Image (cartoon, rainbow over all chains, first blue to last red):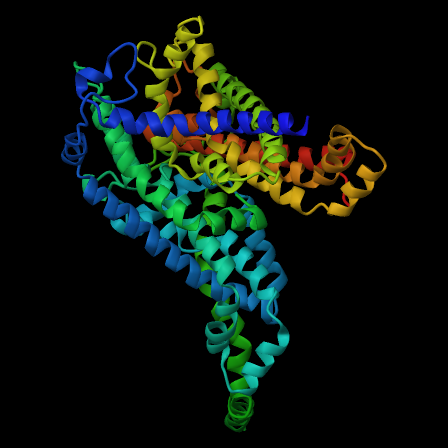
Length: 275
Length: 315
C-alpha cells in the first residue's frame, strides 16, 4: 500500500515535471528545425537534421550581441549601485541612533509598497529633464536605490553580534571599516541572495527599458526579442525556428546561472520571501 | 556705543561658533555620519519613487501630453472621463478576472505541489528546481514560447488536444480563450515560486506536532487539515497578497502575447495605462489611471489584511 502510494506520487510528479519542461523542450526543438519543418503536422519531436544555422540567423536578424551587452552591463551596474547605497543605509538603520531614523525607515518601507509602474510617467519626465532620455543612464539611474535591498540588508546586519562591532571599534576601525570587515563578511548569504534576485528582476525587466529608450543601440535583450517578434511577422509568417533560437539564446544565461546557484536561490527566496 | 555692542555680539557669536567647532568638532562630524550613510539611498528613493508618486497625483489633474512643456489644469476631467469610459471598466473587470483565477489556481496548485515536494523522495531537489525554473525565465521569452505552443494550426497544445479527441481551440484569437490562455501561462510561470514559499512555511512547522498526532492515530488527511493548513495560514496570507499584487501589475505578458486583444479581452490596467501614457500620449489621463491603480492595490491589500483576521492563525 505504501509502495503503491509512493509510485503514484512519483508518477504524478513526473507528469508535473513534463508539463514544466515541455515548453523549454519545444523551444529547443523548434529552434533546430528548418523553416518548412516547423509547419508540419503532426509535429516532429526530433528535427530531421539539426539546423544550427538558425542561431546564426537569429544573431544576424538583430544585434543580439549588443542587446546582451546592454542587458548584462545594465544589470551589473544597477546591482552594484543598489548594493552600495543599501549597505550604507542599512548599516546606519541597523547600527546607529540618530534623529529621524524611525521616520526615514518608515519612508523606506512605504516606498516598498508603491507599485513601480505607477511612477513611470513622472520618471519619464524626470529622466527627460535630467537630459538622460535615450542614454544608457536612463536604464540605470531610477533603480540605483532599492527599498527592498535596504530592508533585506538591515535584517542581515541586525543579526551581527554587537560584541564584534565593539571589538572592531576598539581596534580602531571606523564605520566604513566595520562595514567592510565585519558586516559584509558575516552577511554573505543574504547579499548573494539579493544579487541573484536583482539580477533576475532587472535582466528580465521589460517595461522601463521599453519606454526609457528608443535607440536601437540601447535596446535590452527583452525589448529586442519583443521587437523581433513583431517585425518577423511578414508575408511568410513568423520565422518560428529563428525566433525560438533567439529565445533560447536569451533564456540560456539565466538557466546556466540558475543551475549553478539553484540551492542558494531557492533557499534565499524561501527565507526572504518578498517579491 | 552701538559699534561696541555690535563688536561684542560678534565676539560672542564667534566664540560660540569656535566653541562648537574646536573641541566638539569630532562629535559634530560624528553626528553627521549616519545622515551621510543614509543620504545616497534616500536621495534616490525620494527622487525616483516618492516624488514621482506625488507627481502622478498632480499630473492626473492636467492634460499633459508627455512631451510638450505646456499643459492645462483640467481638475477632475480625467477622472470623469475614466469613470464613464466603458472600456476602462472592461479593463478593470479583466484585471479582476485575471487576478482571481490566476491567483486562485496558482495557490491551489502550489499547495498541492508543496505538500508533494516536501516529501523525502530521491531526486526531489531536481523536481523543485524544475518547477521553479519558469519563474526565473523572462516573461517576454515565456510569452514567445507559449504563443508558439498555442498556435491554432501548428501549436503543440492543439496537437495534444487532437490526439486525445479534443477540439481545436482558437487559443489566442478568440476573446474568452485568450483570457484562459494568459491565465494558463501565468500559472505555469509563477507556480514554482509560491511552491517554494509554501515549502519554507511547512518546514517551520515543528515535526513533533505531527508525531504526536500520528500516535493519536490521525490520518495524513487530517494531519494536513488540522496541523499543516492552520499553521501555514500566515504564509498563505502572505503568498496570496503578494500574488494578487503581482497579478494586477502584469504588463510583459499582455504586451507580448496578446497586445490586449482580441477586442480588448485581455487588456488590463497596466497595459491600458501604458497605451494611454506612451502610445496615445495622454499622460494626464494615464496618471489618473495610475492613481486609480495605486488606490485599488492599496485597498485590496488592506481588505485582505482585514479579512485575514478571521482565518489566519498566528502560533
